[in-house]
Length: 290
Image (cartoon, rainbow, N blue to C red; front, top):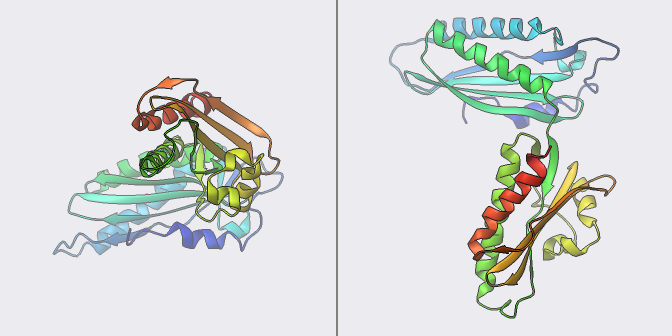
């Protein structure tokens, strides 16, 4: 989104400082840069002075509210010992609508622990104050929450033992499997527990051939090379044209140890029901159980 600070450009800065953790302190140091502001509303009246005044008041209040929490203190910069960096920007898109992009970065782990886009209505002192109160609470909650696990979710694979496993059904099978994978990734990402790693650059014959289920845990090493903490593989096992089972397995990317697994048992339904079953299985056994 134009006018709102890029997370990618800020993450580059994380390689320049120390590990970000202040040793032997009772409070966690937070670096909070001034948010950027852009007005793309095309209103005829120049409101830049009012916007700068409100933005300055917003930042003063935001720093005050974060520092008021006894768990945190403000640090001038990442280079001076901040454990977390808060960045953001606000963009006015129309007379009554503004967007605010806020991210919180764990400096030592080089992980994004919060990345949210907000909208708030109005462009007066009261609306800005309400927005600041809400966003400060969200930021503090993100600082207190554990960092999401970097998870490499590989494409779900099909294990088909039916007589009609080849031919015209191959294209539809691939489409259904793609839907399964996309839906599971969406569910995991929305849970807030996981930060999904792009697996498009996965190397290895098993990954390219979609046979990770038979590679004796090689997906863990592939996930580690991609920068993930954990790997997840899933399998749809077709028993008949209307019967199937679903399974998944999560491994620690460094050790290869199995951390979680789930199996649906025999289910009835057409191929298009794979997606619904997979999302429910992962939700029950991985998201809601933890």
